Amino acid sequence: MLWSLIKIVVFVALVAALTLGAGYLMESQGGIQVTVAGTEFTLGPLQSVIGALVLVALVWVFFKLFGLVIALLKFINGDETALSRYFDRNRERKGFQALSEGLMALASGEGRLAMAKATKADKYLHRPDLTNLITAQAAEMVGDTKKAEEVYKRLLKDENTRFVGVRGLMKQKLSSGDTATALKLAERAFAIKPKHTEVQDTLLRLQAESSDWEGARKTLATKLKTGTLPRDVFKRRDAVLALSEAQNIADDAASGAAAEAAIKANKASPDLIPAAAMAARGYIAQNRKRNAIRVLKKAWEVHPHPDLAAAFAEIEPNETPDARVKRFAALTAIKPDHRETKLLKAELNLAAENFPEARRSLGDLVETDPDARVLAIMAAIEKGEGGSDSVVRGWLAKALTSPRGPQWVCDNCNTIHAQWAPLCSNCGAFDTLSWTKPPQSEVVLPAGAEMLPLIVGALEDHSPKPTKEQELVDATPDAPAEPQSEPVEAEIVEDAETVKEDAK
Image (tube, rainbow, N blue to C red):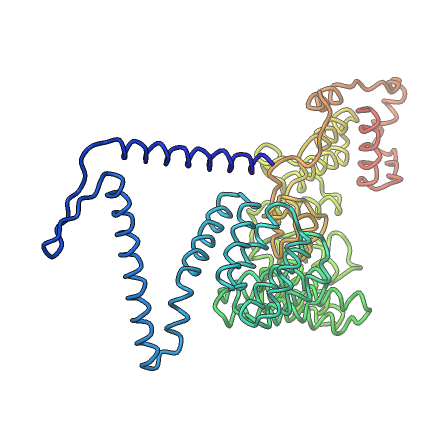
């Protein structure tokens, strides 16, 4: 209603302006004198203006007719589309102008204006392959997913725009969480354009999420063939997929096939810690202990890790603690200055109850790189050497408030994982888990928790003091030492529980 009123007002204003101008010209003096073939024509001011307008119109008509004659001559000479191009030229100009304005509106974030311009451009151009894409993206921009889906389905009908339609529907299903349909659409888009990097990555991620390891390895091989993935990265990720496939086989109780798959994964990427550990266990199951030792030593040389030490211990599960210390010397001698090697030697000596050697094995880790594991070992050493309960509890309290040390952390979102996995459980990224220290502490401690080690360490021993007679009995050399009822580690666990209760 308001727009109609504005148009009426503008029309009346224009008519009034023209009338006023015509009256001014009629009242003014002068004019134009034109001589044609000896005849003079005198035109007044108003007649001169009208004549000028008529002349402009005649020139415009002349050029139009001239263009029509040229198009007709081209048509006669065999150009069958010359006349259609001539008559459609103005429509194309308007259509491309609307298309350009639609693209600019889309780039500037004006979704509804872009949809209107796309509709206008389609009216003049009849090119749905151009206008439908703008309409779909504009509909997504304004949140009209139903409209966008309709347009993408229309794009599927044309062979030239089919890939765009499939890709658009795939992204919509991903955003809505329908990964099963998105996987099928990704496979279809991959079949149309196997060299498209985004489709390759999306299909690989969806296949990994659905545990289609065989299909994921084929997609990864295509990425290598098309040059979108370096060969060294391909070997690493193919090993990750092979290891994941082996883990699934293990879940199906097919241990032999799982072992072979893990061994192949380890050969493809010797630095992949889970593959080395699983391959070693496969060799152990086949009674090929030398192969298991070789695999673990090679992986330890690349990156020492507790899982490798655990697999190394499984080679001889029934050996004594002292024999285990001697056998592990072949592993700990590879990187003796590495942090994990020091911790491993300390734990082995703890099991053998060689507490002084366990302390020496830790070196300066307590001062330079203390974490929960280091401090718990120190508590066990103090307990084994007969330290007071207050000292042991002090170490345990420090362990409670210290970082947990290296863990499986996603390089993409920094999410901590208890075990290695091919996909991050938080962001879904593929092959992003690294054994490293988290950027921040994963435990949020209450205010004042940093004082806990000091408070617990200062606790006094309130146990009854021994009498002089008891001291004489204890000092007697023939008095037999009372055997420990529980291992040191069990006592440490009990003390840790007590510290937790005190902290509460």
